[in-house]
Length: 199
View 1 (cartoon, rainbow, N blue to C red):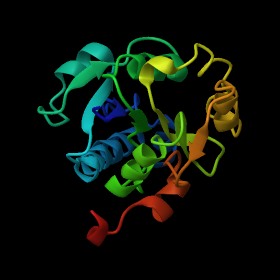
View 2: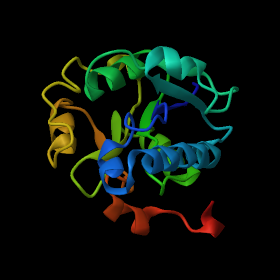
View 3: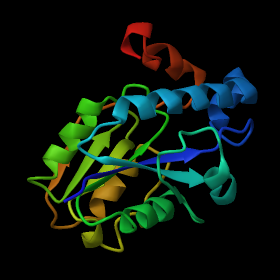
View 4: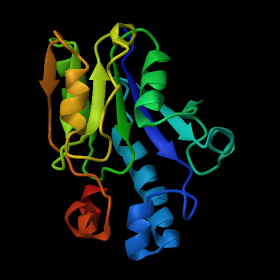
């Protein structure tokens, strides 16, 4: 069955994206960073083994934006908190394994995504942990098998996000793959920005 990789993205408008980073380096610089980071990420994760789909926000502007490659399909994220939006795009994925990632993790490469899909061959769900207690990837072996409780009562943007989400999958086989760091503040930039030879 088709493997689907969904990338959650926001249109890179100053003051609307990476606001914590924007407080450190300015909203325009933060939007510029996110725009170029997203472009690089999409190049790195493109792979014939899976289909890439962009889940965009805000819905109308994201669907019409010229920022991202036109050939990549786009879906609106819709309303709600992060969990509601991720649940919606996972439920809308084609039958088969599906993974969702954010666009603000410079360390992601195609081999990380391949490892996550491979883990779904033996497990019901997979997570890519982040050092802060959150996660950069969530995947399900069958997108239709997610319980309604999956993203309920998750303390987003906290050290409890991963544990809370796993608690919403009682009795399921869960795999953890590589730990990667996202960029929230300027302090995250030096250790995560890829060197020229890695891009």
